[in-house]
Length: 121
Length: 309
Image (cartoon, rainbow over all chains, first blue to last red; front, side, top):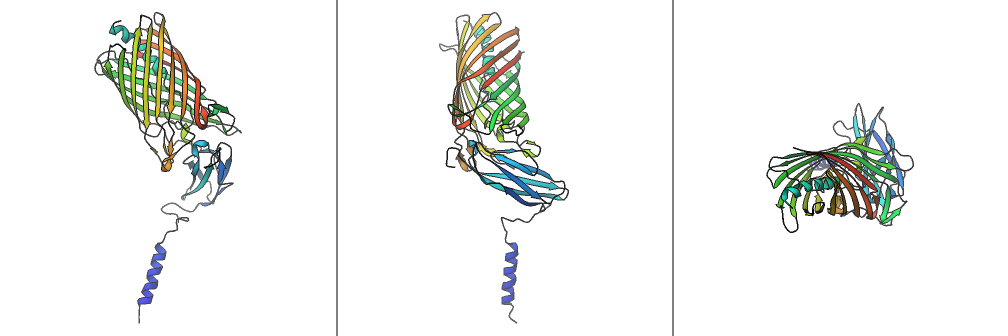
């Protein structure tokens, strides 16, 4: 019996199993899937003028919800925050939400595009 | 005028310049107020100077270039800051100085009723070496200083599990180097003139949250002091602060950063006892040009007590 086709199929299966989906990472370590989604009212705002709200939908019970951003300002806390930016922070800015519970934690980010008040950006 | 006389007056000037540290606008300026003074006072080998300074700064208006603007979500910002200083003279020309500061608050206030972003904590540690090039010459006394700031304080601070914006973080989050050049000359028995040139460069901030580099800072100050009474002097100085644009990730220039600000600084110094001085003053911005649109400094006040051993 020719085992070559079977070997090829097995190789394809192994390769497919090892491939990584960058947009939907499975939780690793004690990171578990606690965040259903991170929803923004709008992902593009004008600096100095607009704000946008970001809401985290989580399955965790009594979660600790942490927010951070690489540029700009986060107002409020908890499941829903408001993001604001001055002209200092024009460009694509990352807002990150980390949800922790007794069982572990989960992290998701969203990109907010900040346009210049003067146009452009 | 003898050297001892000049040295005595330099105590006053030290305090004037101590007080004249940059009480710069809050927007995008984390960390300690920039150290711009040069510790010119060298009381001789093994002498020690200890100082405690308090500062308050308010940035109450948004500026687009040099004009006020009512655009924006940020209402104002302010900070209350205190700094402890120790200066040690290794020789009659070479001295070393350390400053560590604490922000009682560093706050950004918002319109529309949002809770202000308020941070507090230890700022940066500043280390500076001063060398007196000339003690007496036709242009007076000259000294240079070379220093570094270490981000030992609080950075990435959170309130209610939310990371505070970079401009209210107590520490600058990056290493900084600075160079200073100082000159002073006595004119008669009551008047002293002085000038200061300073430059500061910051390294990149590379924290978990921020990738950012502040623009270079250049400062020029010049002024005079006048002895009103024995132990009491008044000083008036003008200072120009020029900050270059900052950089964010991927080396993108931040258009709305950097500024040109000119201050007038009236101050006074009171020699309480032979080895103790108290000083206080105000920083009044008379001209601002903010690149793009930013909060601009409205007022700075300071006071300080210095003891010499």
